[in-house]
Image 1 (tube, rainbow, N blue to C red):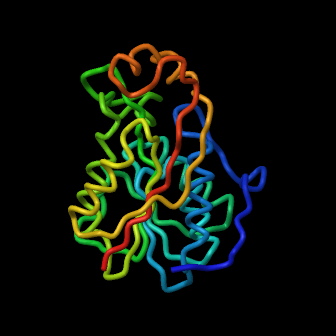
Image 2: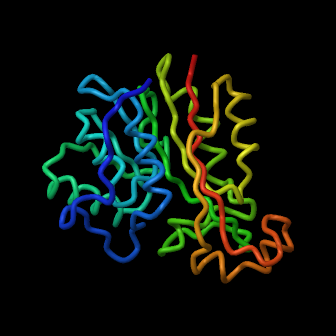
Length: 229
């Protein structure tokens, strides 16, 4: 599925609110948006945004004409996405829930996700607070694996999953997991970005875990595209 539509990034000023505790768009959001704009989206396209945060990706899909459902487990994120949709004049269906639990039995033409993916020394995932937007277990795959496993049931025939995450949580593992579910998967976009404050604070731990090299100060972000036959 391809299109020549050009993306506009960042979103127009004044149309996006990101209050404290709601994930603000960053380079991973930009990469996922560029991948989204290469898909064939029109008013007949049903899109699901898992972990919508501020709703920025969902809004981009809605601007292309899609029928969009956005999901987040955080009530502040849900309310923010609804408000941003109202300010942008876009129609979104925003639901509160834990990933696919909010859309049981539904199938989509396109599923997009920018899930939490930062490896963490903590043995448990946070259940509240700002860190819920990035903490993803000791291998960074707590949410990535769940999305990969759920993708076949979420996608219609020829449906597409677009997911962005850091290579720190193992790009090849994501490709293998998606292939194991019967999807055709490949990396379509990548970018090297400086470590942010969270990764800088746990740099020594990343090295001990074998997730980063000594002295490394950048991570690779990847977008993986998986299509259901």
